[in-house]
Image 1 (tube, rainbow, N blue to C red):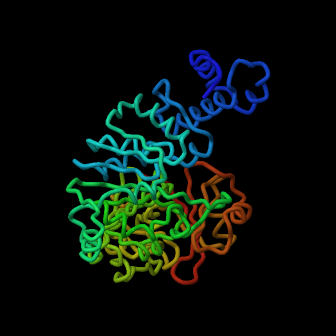
Image 2 (cartoon, rainbow, N blue to C red):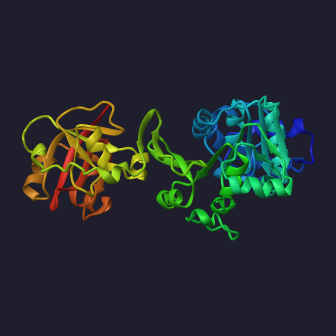
Length: 420
């Protein structure tokens, strides 16, 4: 990895760990004995890991990969969440190893774990890091994940009886061991451009799902939150979906595949410590309760609720009005109101202090003591920038203004402050 003694480069990295990487790169000529590309990768990687992977950043000797792998790897929080889902007395096989963050956390829940990665330099990094992390039971395999899948034996309890007959003729081995397969398909094409269809990811899980389910008792697929969840559910034999958000930012979709196509699909919307679960399709049978706006004008205490990012991704808004004592401001606002403070609502909660139309006289009255506010628009004809300019308000502070449409036509500003 470098042409100098490891102790020398380690000292250099520690000394310059907080330096600006670009500025340091311009000074490369000053350090002829240092493998600067490697050192700069380590410094930049550690700087990113301080917030994304704090446990790894605190471990001396961890080797970080080039920028693209650090950018694409999971965060510590999402990796830990997956480790809480996947644990077994059998074997974990990660067919798309990458930097190995997900694998390192999930592997702790298995007596045996196999990391598969086609790029040899990532395998070298993984071997080094896994030893430091105490993953002595981890087997690092430098191979193409799909080819490795083809080499696996079938599990003995596969439910596809016609395949059992075919495999008997081929003499393919079957095993009793519980196998869990994890995949994180690449979401970029050969030119580096992002793709948004599950069939366009690499490897193509749609093409592989029969073989995956023939060779594993559990299969989990990680997808980008930018992908079409409903299309993925339609294309795959899904039994459970996890929509994972951190700090109200949707980070990833986790699909658990099952051989039982008749099994009801459960959807779990997770945001930090919040969790909301329902059966897929249940929301289509629920008619949302829509506010007639009287709740905003009757003079009583009133609260506003904004669903978290995972629920926004799921689109299960109608269920919120049946599960909680809230009403939707309109069918397309994705904002809810109630006379009651609902502590367990899955999202941000606000106390409403004033409501105004876009009438200038009314606006002057409600905004008289407000010089700055956090502004959001939902189903509203103006952008945030346009509305902020019209209201002449600075950004920030503890006041929140939601500009939305109440009912079918009333453009309304709701002035509130966050609670909880």
